[in-house]
Length: 306
Image (cartoon, rainbow, N blue to C red):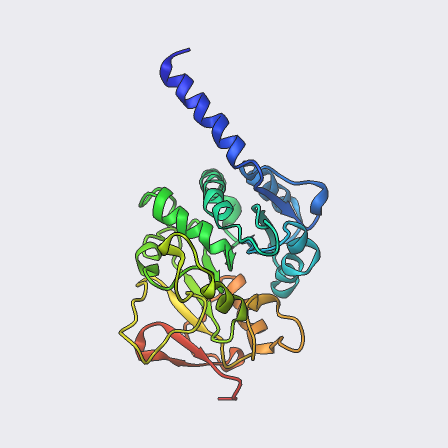
């Protein structure tokens, strides 16, 4: 065995040992049948065998005892039922105890996310005809956006994917710092629609902001909280639309799956459009959209009728 092949083998084994816990799940098979990340093609093949043309959502969860939390406590079923789509769960090791945030797990799992995206890109290229009437959305929730940031900053290379790998990418309540987000989010070049959802009363992100992280890059106000419009000029990603949902509900975090009494019909209508890759660029009273701030692609929402 050559030295080069030996090094590749060692790195491959090390990669498997470090990142073996990420997996894919579907609602059809639940916890009984986890799929390896690189088996995304098998899941899509099963979806295409069904007699429907439903769109598809790949969901990357946040903190918690997953995959059970996302499968059994409503997130993935709610995504599927809310928007009448096929939902796939990308699950990473997101729990290290009540008082220990799995930041290192999230950072390491970015490599699993990379495997998923590169494998899906190849599958989509080989099966272009199957996606003619299907739209695919990537939904990243809370700490799931840490994986995405690390991927874009440290792994992704420009133009390495099809320009339309996903029809929509949604960063829901992203638990990543606002500072510097434009630099890495501007590297996202494999979709034409990018949305960030925000809420000023997001208690989860408020707590996260108070946590002291050893590395400064994870400290500070979170992107998923509302902007401070009274401060310095906002540093926004040029390719992104920001959706401020503060006025629609008193509390928010998992906006697409809020329990009563925080559930809101306009939020539900908004996510039904987003998860099916429908355009929301025009003012639509049915989803509460009432203002675009200074033409900066910051959409504010209201419960008031128009």
